[in-house]
Length: 73
Image (cartoon, rainbow, N blue to C red; front, side, top):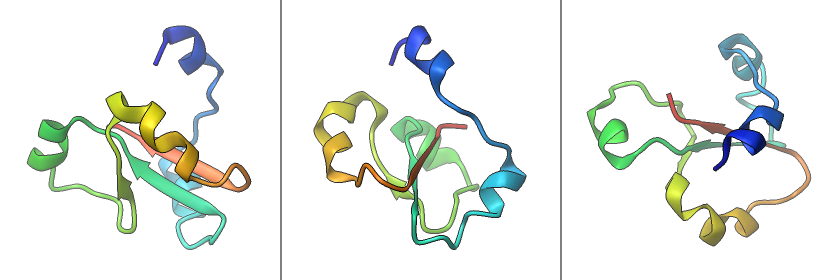
């Protein structure tokens, strides 16, 4: 991840995401660090867990059409 790439990524509010939660075209990925994930009691139901540092190994397994939502906080 680089700052230049991150600046180009669209952001959405929690309300916007909430409106998309049951959409079949949306995949939600929890990319928090393992320690942050483990100590958090707040998780989005249905989100898939992926390691941000392992992006190159999992990025191609998700469809290019539709919406991928990555969250880390």
